[in-house]
Image (tube, rainbow, N blue to C red; front, side, top):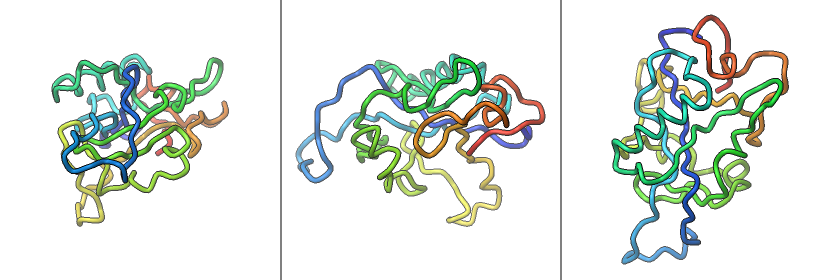
Length: 179
C-alpha cells in the first residue's frame, strides 16, 4: 500500500439487537436509533497493515469507545482472501444500522449491499458524527479518505489470486487493496 494514504475502514456494530424500525415510521418525538455504522476518523498509521481482522476490529472498538459507544461490539467491514476467506457481510449482524446522527443507513444485509443510497459522502459519518472532506467539496487531498474493504459489491470476499486485501490486512508494503 502507498504509505501516504490513510486507511479508512467501515465499522459496523454487531451483537446488540436493535428495535425494528423504518425511516418512515420514525416520529419526531422518538429517540433516534443508536449508531451502528461509521467510517473511522483516523487510521492506525500502518497503511494496509491493520493487524489482520482482529487488529482492525480492536481499532474500531477503541474509536467507538472514545465516542461513547463502547458498550456495543464493533467489527471492521473487511473481507479476507484465500484459504479460510472471510466475507465482510458475514461479520456484521443483520441490521438495521444507523449513522452517528441516527439516520438509518440500511435495514438489512440485503439493503446494505443492493439498496444503499444512504451510503454516500453526505450521510456516511465518522464515529463522532463528522462528515469527511471529499473531492465533492473541493478537498485537494481526497485520497486520504479511501474506504478500503477488500470486498465485492455483494459483501463477499474476492477469490484467491490478485491481492485485494493488503495480504489480509497484515501488510503495508507495495500491494493492493480494493476500495
